[in-house]
Image (cartoon, rainbow over all chains, first blue to last red; front, top):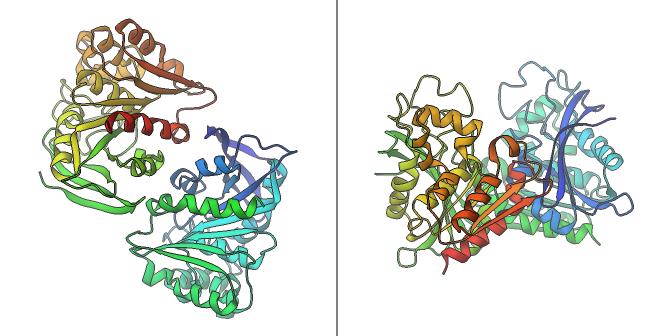
Length: 282
Length: 282
C-alpha cells in the first residue's frame, strides 16, 4: 500500500500531512491526516492517538478545529485522523441525508447491500489504517489510543471495548453511546446492518458493556449540558448505567453550558490529551 | 444598530457568539464573531483584540482554526473577528476570482465604481465595528489591538500605522506588507482605488512607514520560509527595510519550514497572544 501525499505542513514543530491510499477494506482511495511530532524516529517511535470525527466531517476537521496538535507536540504523541466514510462509492442515496452514507460511515462494516461493498470503515479504522500507519511512520503500534466526537465518540468507544488490547486509551466528546436506541443509530444501523437488532449490539457501546466487554483503563467522556443532541441522540446515562453494572471505570463529566460544537472540544481537549498521554507514555 | 444573534457557544469558559448587524459603512448586513472571556463586565471591561483573516475566509475562520480562544481566555482578553468583505453587494464580477470582490475586501474603502457603494471594510473595521463592539460588550475601547493573516496581516499593519492611538498593539502572520508592488495588491488596488498609484500609499504598510507613520510599540510578524506566496506576494524584506529607515521597532521572525496555512498560525499563536496581552494589559 503506497501513500500519495495530498499536502504536508510543518505544525508546532512536527510534520502534519494528508495522505491518500487505495484502501483494501473500502475498495476505494481514501485520505487520512497524520501528525508526527518532532523527534520521532524508527529507533524512538512515539505513541499514536486516533481521532474519529462526527457526522459530515472529513479527515481534516478534528485536526484543524480541536487544537489537539499543540498538545500532541508537547507530549510527543502522533495523531491520525481518518475520513468519516468512504467517498465515491456511488451507492444510490448515499448523499441524500447527512446522517447516512457519505460523511456518516459510523466506523462499522456494513453487512447489507448496497452498502456492504464499500462501507467498511470498521475494518479500515480497526485494522488496515493502524497497520498502514505503523509501516509508514515512526509510531509505536503497541501504544495506540482512540478519541472521538459524536459519531466518532461512538466509534472510539466501540473499537476500544471490542479490542481493548489494541487500543490502550479511550476518550470521547459527546459520543453516541447507545446507537441502537436513538434515531441516528437506528437509521444507520438499519441500513448498514439490517433490521435484525441482535446484530447491532456489536457496534453499540452500551450493549457491549452489557455483554461483558470492558476496557482496563478509565474511559473519559465530556458531554455538554447545552448540547442540542443530548436528549434525542446522545443520552449519556445509558453509558453511565451500563458502565456501573459492568464495573467499567468511567469519568463522565457533564459540562454546564457547552454545546455539541468544536468550541466545546477546544475547551477540554487539553484534559483529553493529558488523559491519553498518561496512559500511552507509561 | 441592533445585533441579531446568529449563534452562541460557550468556549474555554467564555462566550463566543456570531452576530449579524446592518452595517452603515457597508450598506449591507454583515456578521462578526466575538469571544468575551469569563469575568468581563461593564464595571470590569477587558482589552479586545481584533482578528483579520485572509483571502477567501469568513468571520469564523480565524476564530475556529487559529487556537487563539484558549489564550484569550487565559489572558482575559476579548476577541473580535469580522468578515473579509461585504456579502451580497452584487457587484458584477465580484465572485469571478478569489482575490478580488467577495472574500477579498482588503480592509479598505473603495473609491471606484462599482465597488465604492459597498466595499468599505476600511471604515467598518476601523470605526464602525469597534464602536458597535464597545456599545454591546464589556470591552475597554482604550485597550484594543489588531492581528491579521496574509490580506488580514496587511489590514492589521495598515490600520495600526494609520491610527496608532486607536490600536495599542499589532501583529501579523505572513502579511502582504507592500500590496502596491505585488500581484494581489495591484489587482485589488486598481479595482478598488483606481489606476492612480499615489492613492494606494494610504493602504500600503511599507509606504506608510516611508511616509513617516510609525507605531509606538514593537510590531510582531511571523513569516514562514516555506510559504508558497513568499516571493510573489509577501516579500517581508520591504517591511523590514522601511521599518529600519523609519525607526519602527519590528520583530520579524522567519520560521523555517512553515507555510501559509493555519497550521503555521496555530504554531505561533501563543507568542502573538502574549505579545498583545503584555501591551494591552498594562
